[in-house]
Image (tube, rainbow, N blue to C red; front, side, top):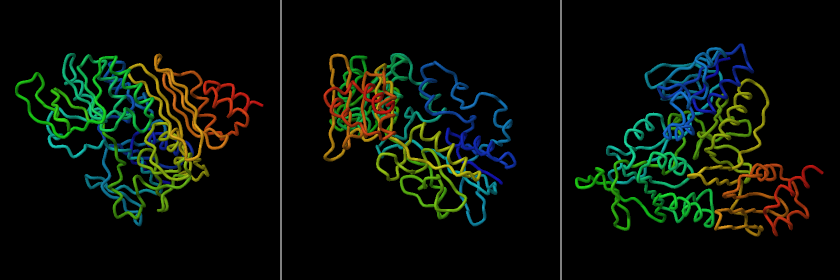
Length: 415
């Protein structure tokens, strides 16, 4: 059996390893689109802080790790897939046959249609090449504008702040982390960042980037309110989009990602998808979503690798979850934290100490949670949501005091 995995991020690497172990007689080829060995994008901020070197971003450290498992790693970008012929073609014209194919091509950073964003000194923070460029421009005392205060933007923010730059963050929504935090949590995080010397502008939009001849930086970042921000560097963190354009004409169904079932299989026999490229089962809604988080990518890779090798592994669905360190303030979100119509919610707010806890319920089931400034028992929130345990009388107790979450967990799961 010839297995070809397109994409060398966590989903692709784990799928390749899983397939190689499950079918030792098969051949496994892992195709990566960047010149470096397979690496984790989530490690790039640590590279920028100087905590690790480039080798520290690599997913596997041993030089012979892949060959030792019988995995061939090659660099290339897929141009087309022809399921009827059981082959794909790389952009250099090389044709590769396959019996089982995994699309684990991840996502690419999106650049909004803003005039001037194609100029010099403007970068995403998505690849090792981006990180090298940012490191060369983010010198102490330089003026840096970060576009976007979502999950990725806030990860990048900490690494930029650690370099001693004059940092301004511009977020078009009315709060930081708009898809991860409600108004209360978003406001707390904004205040925390401002107390750390970071200027945060919410409900603000970049309308253009212009050349600047009189400032220390060579760019003006123009805002919709008319203000101009001087910048040596602009970092764009305004979202990502699944990489799947090469599937055009293949017959594989796509939407916001490649649509897969509970075995990570597409509608075309022999083709699977995983990670940021896959639109898979969602635990909370029962629908299908792209969950661009590393835990989902890792589990997708394992499940897809097993099923490609002929096993029967069922994927139960991704739980939306994020845990984030924003300049030292830990935040977490799980499941349907915004709640549902007719559902109950309980909140505990301690603004003075930057602590916040929100629990959302459907009947007597916990379906979502937010936590800020609280690291103890965060895993319990996830456990109660994913186990779908009935809280019974403990729902009333949690409505009165959300901090009793560990007591509720022990009472309802250990009885």
